Image 1 (cartoon, helix red, strand yellow):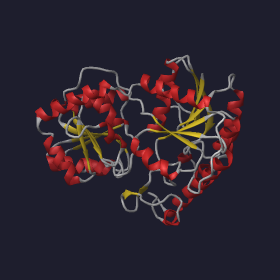
Image 2: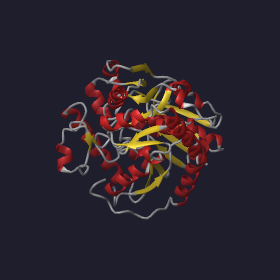
Image 3: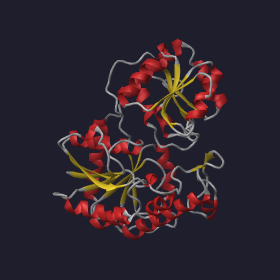
Image 4: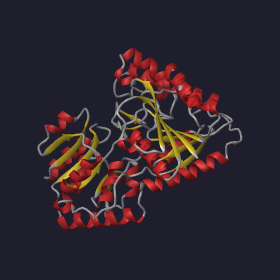
Amino acid sequence: MHVGILTNFPTPKGGAEAVAIESARGLAEAGTAVTLIHGADGPADPMLDHPGIRRVGLGLIDVWERPAWRGAVEGVWNREAARRLDAALAALPARPDVLHLHQWTRSLSPAIFPVLARTGIPVAVTLHDYFLVCPNGVYYRFDRAEPCTLRPFSPACLAAPCDPQSRVHKAVRVARAVVQRAAIMRRFPPRRLDVVHVSDGSRARVEPMTRGAPFRHHRIDNPVRVARAAPADPASGDAIAFVGRFTREKGADLVAQAAQRAGLPSLFIGDGPLADALRAVPGAEVIGWRTPAEVEALLRRRARAVAAPARWLETGPLTVYEALAAGIPAIASDQAGAGEKIRHGETGFVVTPDVAVLAEVFGRLRDDALVRRLGQAAHARYWAAPMTLAAHAAALRDLYAGMVGAAEAPSFQRSAVM
């Protein structure tokens, strides 16, 4: 089998690219031929250095690096992206059996959907976020700092000032969502799009919103890039750790404030708009981005627990899974997909994203015996059914086999929602 994987960048600039790249490597190691097509060029992740992976760059530019007006236009509909993708697919020495799209909003745009439909090749889309149904992509009200409850594309949705930047930015995103929906509905029926969800929670939210659309829904865990090793000793750590982008919706501020209340240091690995505010909190240490190997070493040395108290309905943050794999207790929001992998009180805690609630849980983690017990249980439970790259690749191969077998799918009724 030959699989074409599409994403924005050849190096991780977020979870979507990381999963796309790791999927490519896992499939190649399992003997599947892979062509990874990325919109923007740049240094390639070392994981793509495999004889079974062909890499094709389209030479596009990240819309975030464009002047605002041009970024808005290309973000809504990038004709050049469509043209280059069409040419790249036509130039491949072997036609892919399946195309798998991981992200398209930064360099590719919705203009690629008609190109994918015209190929006649079965297409899968992994939902690392909510851009398939939500204009701002995270189904979150930034104006209210709470998850959204509005029906996507309803009058209330379109009028809501929910964008993190401005109403003008919301208008651009609405335009992108409208043309994206039109491109999918006009081009794909009677064909199907196979939609892959990375958590039960995100599937439960998205599937009802897309009833009648040409989708088949699947559930596959993201891979976790952690080699099996002896469990860490979190009781020897000193800090509550947060790994990722420092934003309010991800709850970085909650970790700093709750750790301070609990009398524990907090360690922040990553970057984001809250970096300066975090540095101002007593006991908080901000150290910037690190390589995956450096992150694992830091967590094994410093973390009593890893916290991801997202305010938004996060689909499945990898940092929680990586902590469990290393034998470090994890604390996740009850609104995030990662909470599905935590046994509350046994391998970590699933909590409301609230400072007082988090401070109480963090205070309990001052107990060395409890922390050590949680870490050992986390390690044992994770490795009893690990989310390894090989397991992820096997699940994908099963998905692709089913897609190829169902290529002549029946027509689906169009949906008013999607």
